[in-house]
Amino acid sequence: MVRERSGRGWFARHAPLLLVALAALAAVAGALAWQYRSDLKLLSYYVRPIDDRERVTTKRDGFDVLLVVLDACRADKLSPYGFPRPTAPALEALARDPDATVFKRHYANSTWTKPSTASLFTGMFVHEHGAFKSWRAEQGDKTGQSFIAQVLPDEVNTIAELFADEGYYTFGAVTGHHIDQQFGFAQGFDEYYALGGGDGERPRVQVTNALVRAVEGNFFGYTHMLGCHYPFPPDVRHAGYMKSYGFEYPEAERVADGVDFTTAAVNTPLSEGSLELTDDDLRFLNLLYEAQIRRMDEEFIQPILAALKEPGRYDNTLVIVTADHGEALYEHEAYTHSGDLLWDEVVHVPLIVKFPKGMRPASLGNEVTELTSSVDLLPALAQMLGRPAPAYARGAPIFGGTFAGSALIEGPACPATLDDCLNAWAILKDDYKLIELPGEVLLFDLERDPLEQRSIAEERPELVAQLRTAAADLRRESTSEFLARDVETDLDEEAVRSLRGLGYIQ
Image (cartoon, rainbow, N blue to C red; front, side):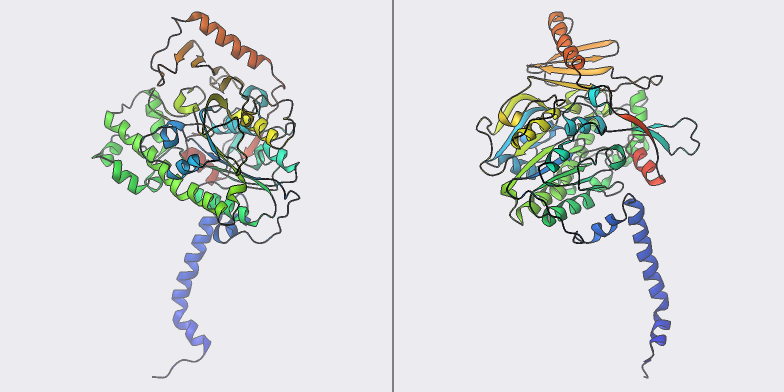
């Protein structure tokens, strides 16, 4: 046999295979570029560690901060909050840390991502920062891809700006669309990456972990993951959890009947009342949600905590794990989350804080049972930095043992004919919760009725009046006007498809 020694002969024989390989690589690269369209650099961050720039901070004698926001994660499904199944072993281990505190009665200040995150960032109530509108199509747009949304105002300083002013290196890796750069949420960040679509959690975890390792000196890091958000396709389920706690359920048959929890399409018939769920449907829905939490905990939370421990930064890091809102699983004949869903399954969220070693305030124990809410985080962090909170911040410095004594939740339940409204709200004070919706007032004693099954509004009119006055005072004592402004934004097909898949646009 005579071997071909010329390169031309080798390429001639292998050209078909090379073409196939190049085509496959091009397809993969194209898919990744399509998925992570917001910044071409993200493609390289997804396939290799961040190592192409120097990240130097002037702060080297303080503590690090990592804020982890788990989108749509409700507190009552987590073992640190009493759930009996092991949905979140990594979070449970974090909560058991001797320097950790679990805030048991923590509430989001709104019912969906943008207004809730804006309140967390600014310490302002929703009616003050004004960023409460959902996406809506621009009138006259024929492509279906031009939308009006709102921008977090420049006039306020965010948590990131608080730390940037102290010399911290600041970075964020978040889910896109609602809280990306174009809507003002990148204020104060040295690096801010909005990664959306598909299996978006993995690059968020990778970027966060790479930046933790890359930053010299102290950092403030923020990562926001879809975490527990509906819908629940097969690839987000933890197989072991499904096997351990599953049961005989004819999923394919129920999907054929229209009970399909893998897409947002099921929302419409449920909200219209044209689809009924059986007890087994509800049991399976809860199982899906729990299995998604377990996958998030195992594949994303645990690696992030491990990344802090590898370079020895864990002990010196203030780790804050919370959520922007929860998720209704048809407890009150409502699925997912929206402006007028003010039930605890939507607004009672986790807050687990692991302080730097030896820095947990003496006033805090392993658990705090006082009412807290998202607006408390900015004042609490400002106090840890030894500086006053901005004048507009409405929360209390809870890490020092000071509490507001109430929690205000505002949901924009707007009729189709109105552009601006905040006509759905709730207030919690002591063990009572008042919910006010257009034409409806509900009062619950959460100590005796934690599942909010029986309103006592008619029996306690004097208490309804007191709580209404307390809410009115909070809403009247605004420190600002509506600062958020509307902007028109053109979304590409991937963004529209992703938002539609999550049920945010039709």
